[in-house]
Length: 376
Image (cartoon, rainbow, N blue to C red; front, side, top):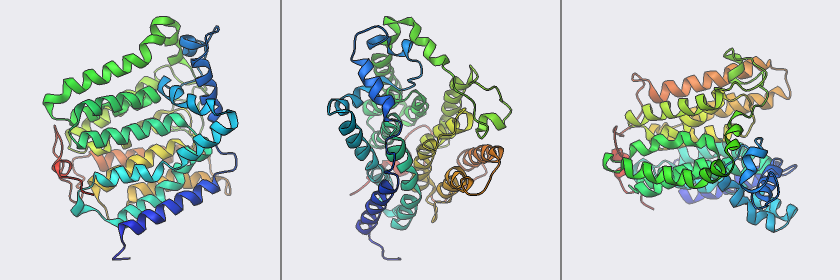
């Protein structure tokens, strides 16, 4: 394994993706009906449709850009569109890894780390892309990774547009906004204005046409006993009114601290960690975003020989769920594992006393590693 070639790693990872796509194929696209419904409603003009969409259907906590992207699939036919969409989402894992791989300076690229990260990440990504078929999260996370690439290239406009696109696909992804602060200071306002304009272009028409759209932000779901929110003492059966804003604020705060510490590649990891800490639900596909963020952090910044933060997340957030299907595990234990993993992430990424191997980023702008050409 010491002379493993990158091209061989990619072949293995594509084969691994195919295997897990087949494993998850039964019941694939289980949540696709939300996107089918939303795309149909967005382009209809009866009562409760069109720009009344979010006011009339607050349960559709999905951004308008996602519904726009789902529309072509629906035009292919209900079943045909669902199958093609699920297949395409299932194939997004390796390309996302490839983008992150290009952000690693050539001298620091380790095929062994890439292989280990991919073997851990791709089965869980299959829960999102194949099993659930959650187009909004796939698009939001893909836009987040693309924003990292644009940031690494010094393209402020593209960075702002991609961060806004992520939030236009799924509102919680606005927590990627601290990436803007990793741009050179001269580009901050330009990127922020572009992001704000793209956000308003997507959401303002709904608010102006039907002010009741704001009520969608108060939509509640039951609080799962195994959620971090519940074990932290917030046991109200419905989502607290402050919960969604708190998720966003916490993600932005943690991401900003990471940027100040010169660790902007951790922004996705911290945003998704804030989500699993405070979200009232514990859907398995949430873990996909956390592991994508962990892979980004460990490949680009930490460069551990073994991606143990990714491994720990896969075990604590996904492996224990699988084990719970065989051995009874108290739901509260699962909740504390979520809280514990988030605490571990924050400690590793943000605490001043934690040193990382070969970390060369600098606060207030692109790190030295990011200024090096990525190579091919």
